Length: 116
Image (cartoon, rainbow, N blue to C red; front, side):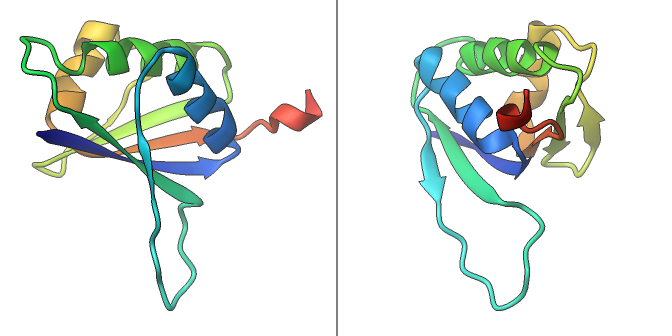
């Protein structure tokens, strides 16, 4: 089973998890205990138990659609080789390849949904 750990910053938690729910993508919230302040607000884990040629395809489509819905949204993928990619302008196919190699995905929305 492959997993992707998603770190949610700023105002991204509600909009990103609601978008995943609407796309039928299951995730679980991870509780992180720390003795020092942490930069990420929350972390979720997405597990792909699907044995198919493109197990991350649906997630890639959902991530690109969520990010493209507002200019205030950013997604950054760090691969297992510690390469960092800001996926603005990437297609879902390109994002899928990076998600398959990801160690972590950082999701940021600097705009507050409550203010719009």
